[in-house]
Image 1: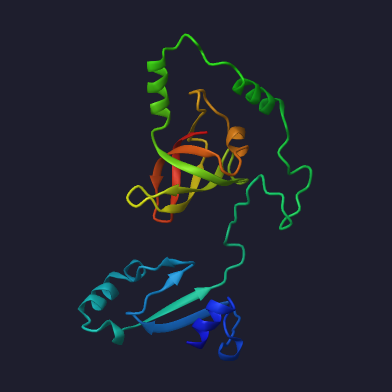
Image 2: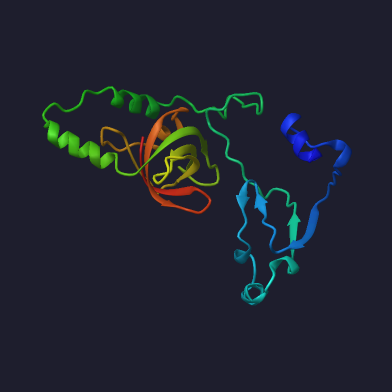
Length: 222
C-alpha cells in the first residue's frame, strides 16, 4: 500500500521500502500463475515454453505450485531506435549534412502537387478513384524515420482507431522498396513524399498487421 500511495501521489517508488539493483543479467523465479508484462505488453507464457513444458503446465492442477524462471539479459547494440526525420529537439544534435536537402526532385514533386486536376474526368469516375484510394487503414502520422540500412525504406509512427471499439492505438508502418506509394490524386508518389509527412497528417495504409502493431505496408496513400 505504501508503494501504491507513493506511485499515485509522488509518481515514483518509495525509496524507503524499495531496493534497486543494477546488472547485465537478471533471473527471477515465480509461480506460473503470475502474469508478466514487458513494456506494457502481456507475455503469453505458452509462447516461450517447449512442447513438453506446455503439456506439463496444462496437466498441473494448481499453477501456483509450478515455478517458472525468467532470464533477462542486457545486450549492447541490440535495440534499434527510429528517430523521426523532422525531429529537431534537444535530444539529438543534427549536422547540416544529415538534414534532408531540398533537391530538384523535391521541388519537382512539390510543383507537380500544384497542377490542376484533369477537368475532363467525370465526377463519378473521380468518386470511384477516390474510394479506391481510401481503401485501407487510416493512420494519423506522429513521425517519420528513415532506415539507413535499407535503400528507400522508412518507418512511419502513428495512431489508428480500432474498428471494433474505436479505441486509438499506436501503430508503426514499415515501408520498403516493394511498397506502392500513391498520392491523393492517384499519381505515383516518391520516398521523399513520405519523408516530408508532418505530424497530424493522415495516410491510408494497406498491409498485414503483426501482433506487435507493425504494418508491413503493401500500399500507402499520402
